[in-house]
Length: 239
Image 1 (cartoon, helix red, strand yellow):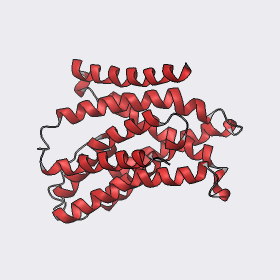
Image 2 (cartoon, one colour):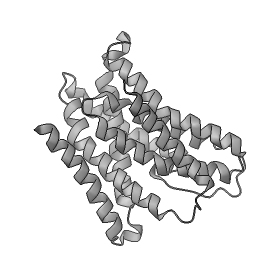
Image 3 (cartoon, one colour):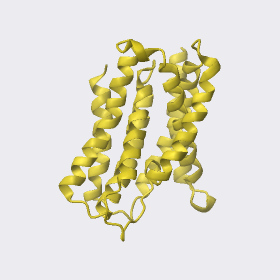
Image 4 (cartoon, one colour):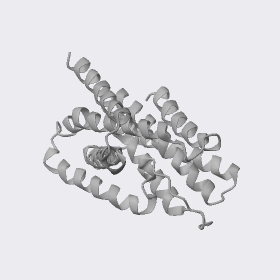
């Protein structure tokens, strides 16, 4: 288990959320570039690393069903999270109740994202998830503030969100090392669900990265940088 991974995942999410107190919501072009980069990076890592690893086991004849299930699960989660995991920020000026659906679904999503981090050569994936959580946490903080949640409560909730991926990583580490014998055999299926979620998240980010399908050289460069870094790690592993 890597303390560095846990610190990086929690730190990026928390810093991204706390940035809502110092950055104006209507000026988030840099966050959109980070989204484009992380979406491309997550997609490349999923294709190059996670899919080959999960299909290498004896349970590969059922993995596809769980990948499809994860894809569908993310569609359902977005009915409650309203796309915050993509960095979307929605105004809730007339809604002053606590957004339970958004908070719970986003925490569950982050928890699942931490689970594939115990597969081999997972350092690239940790970086991708950590960067991806910056705009997601920023959007969450914006929604909480928009619902007139007290500042101290917002900070506490951001800490809870920041802890979700590390908790998923810790549980996954226990499963992959057989510390929980009754659940260890289901590890490939859990990974299949996470892969389905990653495929949905990354492709949605990439498809939505250009407003009205207009070409953006900055976002295109960000996408190619994300893919290139994933490819560098892939070829270094191959050698």
